[in-house]
Length: 514
Image (cartoon, rainbow, N blue to C red; front, side):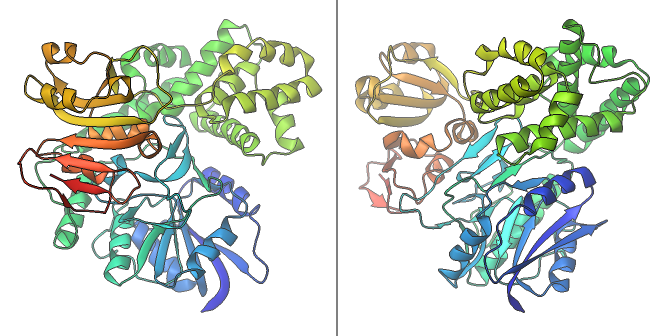
């Protein structure tokens, strides 16, 4: 085993995405005395099988398993990774995104609550909990987009012979072998996940496999989960619809595709995401009478998609300060201002900063495009942000600068409204509920009231859950999934189950159950 070698391992079936990942790998600073290697596994039968093949072929002590569409944007990443591993021999694996406690149904992809990563689309980022003392945070599971190890442990290809749950399984395997799984404190965000939509037609099968394999050791159960019951049929319909649209585009009938994508009920489907954005570009260019359109009649869909991906890669390189003169020339010479503006608006996190940077490039290289882009300034005044997943039922007249109290209820009715009012501190209180009666809601004067589920709570508030609230009070018996969100954090939580018994600490020291 070479203790001064770091291997990057990826299963590859999209060469354009992997080429972009390699661009960022090549820019990383390599710590003195260390060497790196890249192992690409093509035509792997499963993620676990591909990783096992690469692992057994490498003598590197440190291995970084990444998805082919992950860009490692923090150039000092390797030094920080080594520092984390070498600070504690018990750390077996580290990642950038994960959860401190598994949801009972094991669907961790909707409950990542720790770590930080930039994403492509909605949301443009995910910022979860990090420890105030900036030490590594121990988690139960990691997202497979980035998983680094300092020990070799076989991936369970005997059970997970597909592309789902291999990552959570490997976390459990390390923990079974007495090793910690952690997320380091990130001085800067380490990675950008340029992910396409996930095909979940076999997700339920592997969810059940995970529970069968580890349900006796971890708090997960099959329950009556039906979220993915019809996913195989939905996936078949998505594939057929996408193929139909690709065929129409190749026949020169892109306006028909864009007309269909322009209907609100057809928007927001991840499987059609690239086509939807290409249509936005096409229609904006038509409206502005652009001479050289992004889409040219006679283009094959694959050619159009590669052109779109190249533009997106250039925009992200500029946002992450990774672009050079060549990328700037490409942007000015081959893309309309409208195409650039749409991609920035949809994919950029530092939107206003990137707008100013591109504006300076236009000013230097093409004054006509500069004048057009300058007129768009107002649209880029705010940075990329999350769409609102929680529904606001009532708001306070003005926000208080003090940290809020968060009260969480399953239902606001004539019984629970008494509890809510007893724990409500004027406009410093935010109340979250899943259902409500109109009469009970009207009694909550001066309180901010949000409606949603635990999944929407995590997606919407992200790290604000741990920075904006000085106290969390949860009411009701069946509220364990909400409690898990605050496991092992600095936020004081009281879970009032309404039993009348005394309070006891459970889960972690910040959580009391009464």
